[in-house]
Length: 611
Image (cartoon, rainbow, N blue to C red; front, side, top):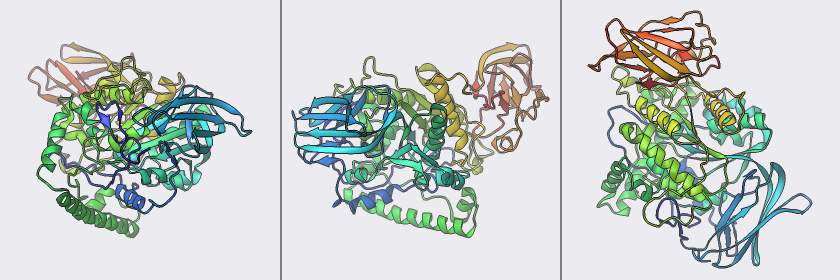
């Protein structure tokens, strides 16, 4: 097999050279359209750096590549200690010499083969074998051979595997999250495992070979996504089988970073992102762009070093306080073709490298970076879900090479989406552009329109003036409960937030009836007060006055007024405002940051809505 690019048709709608190819990689990022809201998403505080991993990878080129034996190569997502998906065909894939026979098998501790599959390498040099579905268990040994070449992976478990994707709030690691030190010290479950996919925008085989599956135990669990850790920990407790998490995220990335260009070119909502990128690099030499990137990197590294010094000098200092001392994070980085945050970059350098590793489903926490183009987010989220499902479908590798087309009858892998929590830049607190409510609404609509897409509400989880809230356990636990309920059929899991089911306009009042409203009550006002409020402490107070209820009404002139709200006996909320005599519209929690005090008995917050 040649050590050059290997192309195969993919769901990106074009021939991809990213799968198992060897390309020079460096780090930078595209700029972002000027937004009405002062927003800097960036990387999560304390997250494992993109640049550091790439720099280290270049010093590892002389090390043994665990993914290669002669002309045989297996995708780098396979390693010792991996978790494979139970109860469905297991995809194993890589590259080799065209027409050579590849044999894949699983054997137990006694050397007995429990599953085996054979395939031939395609003309493209790409091969995929599918082992038959097996129940949870292990440890096993995965054997891959091609003529005289062979690879062996040990301590392999079968259980539940989930892919965790998104930007900085999925990226925020256990060691940085609330009570992170305690969580790390308590992590002692060797059957919960994870792998961090290297954060790159182009394929870096050395970095990939250095990334391996690890048990989510101290100390290495500190570098795992906190949301994904709490999600996996809860699944382990409830399902009793091994759980594996594929961490695949980069802070500061738009949703357009996570799809192929062929896919994006079919979308009106994606066109401005593509045009912006093309304009940013037009007429620039690679030398000029590398110089710009290096200059920004020095500034960024110094800022991060100063942040660490400030944290050591002032333990417990908040990120907004740090920003006031040091100035805001130097963001965004310059736009380059080798940036890991340009459109399509992590899709090409990360997602395509993992697919079609068999998974139970996907976790998705993203949207902050797309605030400036909130109106198009729903279209892009639908496209992402369709394209990833096509990419992971084992029958989907005959896709056309031009233009994205969904695979007919492609498997609908579950998507569990985190609705954006509350947040606003403190400088914009008195002039909220209300773009985040638009993104939340898009996430809600997609979750109700597409099969096997579910959503958690996190309106009680944000932090004022901090886009990276530290409470990730609530998010991870809710995602796990959602999976237990919607994917694993556990009706005892509390997964349904209240949502507006019926709205009636009657004279000067609006009657809103909620589904999943058992024990409907008020709790606190905004996330900061809800965090300290006792469950149901306000249950006896059925009435909330305007400005604290979260409800607003408007008549035909479209001017919104804060409203009073009263919880009735049947899950209905009576809403009215003295300033609006005949309301024709109603909305709840339709702010970036503001009152959202309505909860059900399970302690789940109500989904925002506008009718």
